[in-house]
Each structure stands twice: as C-alpha cells, then as structure tokens.
Amino acid sequence: MACTGKIIFIWGSFLLISLLNVNRARNLLVALVCKPSSNTIASGFIQTRDTHFVLNGSPFLFNGFNSYWMMQVAVEPSERYKISNVFREASAVGLNVCRTWAFSDGGYQPLQISPGVYDELIFQALDFVVSEARKYGVRLVLTLTNNLQDYGGRPQYLQWARSAGEPVNSDDDFYTNAVMKGYYKIHVKKVLTRLNTITGIAYKDDPTIMAWELMNEPRCQVDSGKTVNVWVQEMGSYVKSIDNKHLLGIGMEGFYGDSIQDRKQYNPIPGYEVGTDFITNNLVKEIDFATIHAYPDAWLPGQDDHLQIAFIQRWLTSHWTDSRTILKKPLIFAEFGKSKTYPGFNISAMDYFLNIVYTNIYNLAKNGGTMGGGLVWQIFTEGMESYYDGYEIVLSQNPSTTSIIAQQSNKMTKLEHSLNNPHGDIFEQAKQRST
Ligand SMILES: *[C@@H]1O[C@H](CO)[C@@H](O)[C@H](O)[C@H]1NC(C)=O
Image (cartoon, rainbow, N blue to C red):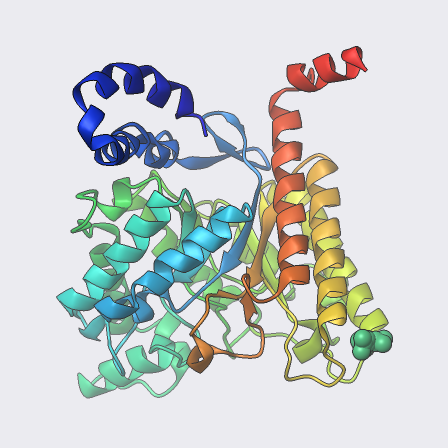
C-alpha cells in the first residue's frame, strides 16, 4: 500500500497521545491517511490519444467486467453489501473497469417512471454504485438505455410515445421519431447532470466514470447502419454538449454492414446483419472508441469449440485492424462469455475459452495498442442466484477461473507499466543485475 509509510510517520507522534486507545487511534489513522486511495481515481479522466486510452497522458490498459444489475440490487439497502463485495472481490484480482446499466425505463423498479419523471430512491441506488466503484478504484462504463426490452429500452420508449398520441408503430421509430428522441435526451441530461448524493460530485464531473454508452447493443431493421448513424450523430453531439470530459461509445456488438462489403464475411453467419455498421457508426466524430461483443456459443450454436474459437480470433483481429487503420480509435472487447446453458459446458472448457480471449486481447494490446482491454460477462458475488443467466462467475466460488482473470489483470498492468516506462522497471533491472 502506498500510504503505509505515511501511516508509520504519523503513527509515532499519534501514539504518544493515544497509548490507552491504540486500536481506535489506529483505525482513525488508517481512515484518515488511507483515504487518498479514492484519489487514485480523482486524479484524472480516462481519455484517448490516437488509438490508445490514456490516463494523465500515459497509456491506460485494463481488465474489467460486466455487472449490469448493480443499480437494481442497490435499491434495497440491506442488499447493498453485495455491490461492495463485487467491487472488493473484483479489485482484489485487478479488475478495474465495470460496465453497468444507468437506466431502468418503466416496469419494475424504474429509475425513469415515465418520460422525465424519476424515482429519487432508485437514483440514490445508482449514486451508491458510483460511490462504491470510486472507493474500490474501479472505473465505470455506464450505459444509457437498452435495445431490448430488459429494463425498458426502446420498446418502453415506443410505448410512452404511443401513450402520448404519437403515430408510431415500430421500435425502430425510436431512432427517428422526434418525441422519442426528445425523451431519450431528457434521460441523457438527467443522468449526466445528476449530483451524486453520496460523493457530492456531479456524474459529468466524476472521473470514476470512464465512459458513457448510448445504448446496449443497438440494432435496427430498417437499413444497414444509416438510420442508426444519424441517431448516433445527433445523440453523440447532445452528450458532448453536456459533458465533454467523458469518453463516449455507442454500445455496439460490432456487426459489419454494407459500407465495406468484404468485411461482412467476418459476421458470425454470412448475411446475418442487425442494421448497424461497425465502420460508419464508429466513424462518427463524437464517438471516442469502438466496442465489440461476442457470444460464440449463442451465435454459432452447434459448432464445436474449435470453430467457435476460430471465429473469436477472426472477430477480434478484424475489428482491431479496422479500429487501427480506418477508425483510428481504441477498441474495447466489451462483452464475452460462455454459458452453462449450452451443451458441452464445463469449467475447463470455460477456462480454456477465457484464456484464449485474454491471450488475444493481450497480444493485440502488446502489438502496438488499440486494444484497451476486455470486459467479461459477468461477475456476481455470493447469494445472487436469482440473477444468474448462465454466464455467471462468482470469484469466491470459481478458483480456476478467478486465477485466469487475475493473471490477465496482472499481464495488462505489467504491459501498461512497460509502455509507460519504456526503459524498463528500475527495480527489475537492479534485481537482474544482482543475480
Ligand atoms: C470439457 O468439455 C470439453 C469440450 O466440450 C471436453 O473436451 C472435455 O473433455 C471436458 N472436460 C471434462 C473434465 O469434462
């Protein structure tokens, strides 16, 4: 711990006046002196330079995770310890970025009860998530709505617009209908300008937040990325008009569209397109980095592990190349996992899958950057069985998987250090000289 020396220094003088109350004095000191652990995050915003993520001007690499449910679980005060547990257990194995939902549109425990109407208690649950992330040194990627109906998303916005008498009939009107675009902007503004009731810091000013994402996995039936592109441009400028400190991503899965025909061969199934275009959508000026997701077990059902792994390698390499050469922006592998619900699952197959993904991420990051890191789907803590989706990893219960995750964190940290100290680690050099 970096603060140990300081504790010892102050400890000496403090001891004189606190001999009778040693434990209390020590706790006080640790609380006072160690508080700067949260200043690690306060020291800077994650930014991009060329195709790198940077922090205070130096390359920033990470190993991270998804836990979409955090705000929902934090609503119940007696459950909040689970949020703390996840951040504690995750940061103990070096996971330093967490992607989670900053929306819950209508339905059960809605953050947004109806357009522009918010539940203060649910917002305080999100405040807690942000505040705990800060405490444990984990940065957040916060996603602003969903493509699918889970926790509201586009279908909920459509329903709200209909109730308001708008002549809309498809989820895809979300991207073009003025009323729905207005509703979405209200949400964006509400979240970005939220004053955290625990930290006292507005979300838009909080470096704990690494980035916003416009939507989880946008899709569209209308065309090959053009409709989504116009929407990304409008909403991207809107986000930046409120908050130009934070990075912005779209939240895409990475499917290729019509703009470069040749790339479509890398989609999981040729001809399987979802109305987005990885290239043109991510070229939008306000978008700072690209994302991809991959679920080979769900996307390539029935194909054996060998074919699924070959797919992942192609998927990663092609997007990495395009991010470097065409987009000139960094890339995050923002969702990947292996589900217990598909035939042939076992822990060693899962660990093998994770190892391959992590090795690819590391090699690409080492090969000149662009790849910032991966976010595994998804991390839980004990006692959360009701949230399981087949992809769950409980760090305290899956020792082999946890050790693979810890190794990756360690490798990414070392790589980050070597990039930031191109002449090598002086302690390491001294050690080598002495042996
Ligand atoms: C786990 O699954 C893989 C691939 O499906 C298989 O080759 C392997 O034998 C299985 N291992 C165990 C321990 O069941």
